[in-house]
Image 1 (cartoon, rainbow, N blue to C red):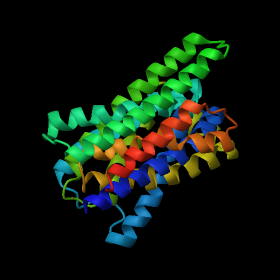
Image 2: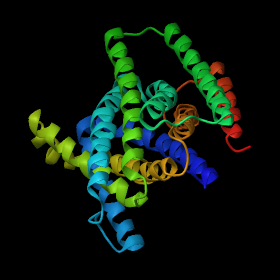
Image 3: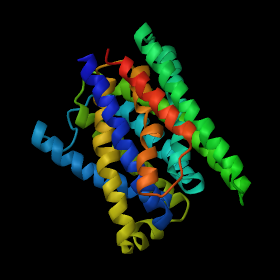
Image 4: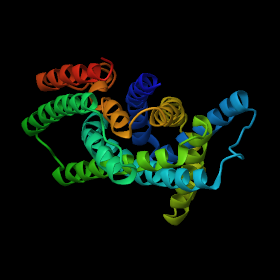
Length: 300
């Protein structure tokens, strides 16, 4: 089952790569708060239908109190806190650069996993993680060289975007550990439902507190293109991606899962070129090759 968990983690990286492209486009149209709320609305509908088919229960009414506690905390940290930083970074510095900063998530998750769960990665996993992180670091350095060669009009905005992307990576790592604590021995789809429900409540609260409820709950619905991109991103992100990540966490080490998910910054390079018309440096291509080689170590 460990190999299946590793495959699920890699599938998560693919899903999050696709969702990042849709969410960047949607965030520029309807704003980050609206995208975050409606992506979870779409996700909970899909998850509830899936749970009804697979479990006969549309909602996780059979979840123990421990699962509700840890998974709700995971939803608030991993969705609300981390995604507010993440989606604002998408707008400020773009999805490709933002996801490069998520390369910090694997070592952070491994550290949190050791402190909270006492998990130690096997030597094979450590080698694979080192190769993947080295490859991603090469891609980051290549991106930085390109950025230095360009004339940046708003340096303060970009620096703020870098900070937000870093905080998003830390929030995702913390959310991953909380997910593992709450989902152990419980159904994967139902566990994801609890996380998404907590996230929906959290984003609705943020909209009310920041006096943006009218914009989020009424005005946004008039932008069909923004809603379409949000819905498409929701299918690949909080529905398929999050479900696969929960499954992976239940079948292999959290550090391994985070490392394989950390391939998303490299996997996003092709769609960035094809759909977002962005330039890619040689360093990013070399980093992608090294990261893919590191991924193969997990399957040896």
